[in-house]
Length: 84
Image 1 (cartoon, rainbow, N blue to C red):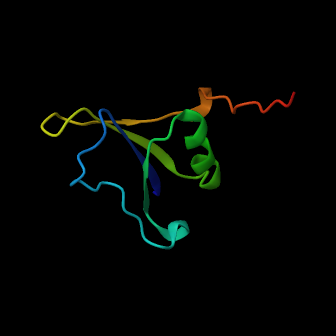
Image 2 (cartoon, rainbow, N blue to C red):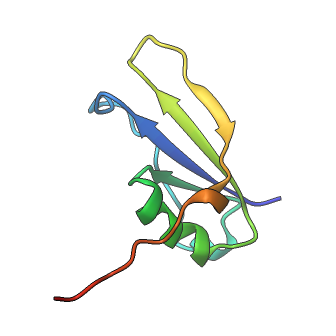
């Protein structure tokens, strides 16, 4: 099973900790690691790799436990672009 793991870290992650690192060939990667960019922008990545399970890691600080949960993007609606 392939997956996407999205990191939501508030406040900003420590500068000396690198959680998001991917190989050059994302299509064949077992796991794609990504920073959380908000629901709408995350949909771009999810739509590019539709057959993967999506997981969200939430961090709160260097010495705080992190939460891992499966994320269901089905309730996120794509943004509508309007022109004046």
